Length: 254
Image: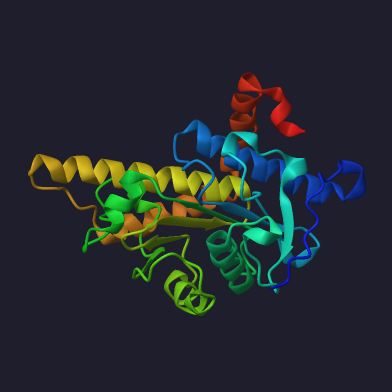
């Protein structure tokens, strides 16, 4: 395995403004995941493609808590390598994110979590149902990948990518959730919506009552509306999320 990874803290002055901004956005994503309670100590990951270096991406150091991630301590790795913890990165995280980003040049960020709500929806044979506005964001835009164990084998990448296709999200059955976006904001907000949709559905199904399924034509209309929203006015909420983090710990940006 190639273990040549520089783990010294990165300095803003040693990189392009675009890379530093990507680092800030990814660090914010980790911090927000922790704030919303979606983390799992040091496990699960988010990633961001390095601007101008299409085959490299940023990911959390293996041993760090989400609350400890900053722009300067993110690790930059190559999608073309074969890395594990000896290189400072989590092997399953490198396998999943390196595979997805290499297969989807149209996306720059991926978010993966193992929340209980996400694993619960991932274990339901019928999957996500169009019974709420958050769910409709994913109408005909979510894939499903059957469980194969801990994602360590590069051979699984092709099957994950086939299941994801051109979708905005992937439900890894019996495992967890994955969302992807052109920006960190998009991938994070999609994860927030997917977890909300799963939670709402599980609560509805627990009542035993009949659920109101949203008609297909309305689903497609709203899903398209959200895509337009995310590429336009929706971006205005990202600075607000960052201000939330500033209010907790302004040093997260270092």
